[in-house]
Amino acid sequence: MKKAINNNSLHKFLIVMVLLFACFTIFNSSIAFSKSYLDNQQSIPIKRPINFLSLEESADTIFNMIQKVGGKLIVNEKRTTLKKNETLSSALKRIGFDNNNINKIIQAIRNIYNGKKILTTLPIGMIIDYSNPSKLTGGAIKLSYTKTNDVFVWQDINNNYFSQIYLRPTKLENTIVKGKIQSSLYVSALKEGIPENTLLEMISLLGFSVDFQREIRKGDNFEIIFTKKIDLLKNVIIETKPITYVSLNLSGNKLNFFNYEDKYGLPQYYDENGRSTKRTIMKTPINGARLSSGYGNRKHPILGYTKMHRGLDFAAPSGTPVFAAGDGVIEKAGWNGSYGRYIRIRHTGTYKTAYAHLSGIIKNIRVGKRVLQGKTIGFVGSSGRSTGPHLHYEVLRNNKQVNPMNIKLPAGKNVPKNNILDYKRHVQKILSQKTALEKSIQNHKIATNELNNKVSELN
Image (cartoon, rainbow, N blue to C red):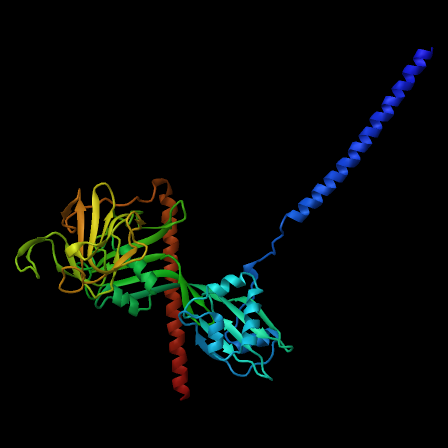
């Protein structure tokens, strides 16, 4: 009986000890969890949320911006530009700000997001609009430090400086440009107002299918659709998107090419039937030039005797851009004896191209560098054994020069067969867009003529 009682007491004692141990463990775990949670809270940095899409819109003048933010009144707005080797501090000193105001302005900019970086990356030639402070009026500056952003700094009524980044208002505008060729495609397109970067893209695109020196005639016409991004404050184009559509009418032979993105989202160009515009090598790697010397025997203009000319010479003004004739790797870039400044590109195991007598080579063009077809690699010049500015262009097949005009090169990849129906719908969509843009231009002309007629009647 006594043994049973002892066993019962021992059993109860063990239960109590287990419960006490469980409570102790839970209590310590809670403390440990809480401490760990608090420690984690303290060690995780919390970044200030920045949403550039919510930036306020900029204003065209400092005066209008002051009205917007409620700063101290200004009375005289001036303009200058950031000069070479100048900092913002030295520029402000030059235009009449004293050291006290300069230090406050610099500090105000440092206080904004990325302010220190902005101060160290201000571009040469940047426009600085400013108003000098006085006893009665406030100091203020506006820095147009990128194409899309301004930094405003202004004084409040207590003479404290504040700074903020503002977004320049822009709009995207689909544009169609049509023109007739008078001298060269390059010059005629520039006269019609096509931005130079879009024009170079257009020449690169057409260079696979058109010999600019032999096939283009006076009176041929072109049309192009592209999208431009316009700064609404300055009413200037600050950016252009890849060409949507381009057409060239060569003596009645019309070439139409359409932008159709590949699976990587990159623009590729095809004709109405989905055939690629690309070739392994462009027919001519330059525009605005004339063929001054062909491939074959000729009397050398300097040496004075008949010598085999193993390339094509294109006469053009010094500084005219020279394009890579195809995708490839730079095999040589630099001085090369009588060739002068020289570039050679390896395109495939079979083909290479060479470019000689250049006035300059693009900075990042170096041996081993991969280049894309149509990208500028250098500029026309007269270096080496040369009588005047021109491009000497060679095509090498299995390391032997061949006549560039006689070789037949394989085309690029066409639209895949399983995508052809989608491509056809895409082409129709672009053609509908073209019709709408043409109609819009026509309506604008009619409205302008009607307005002019009404003005004439009133007079």
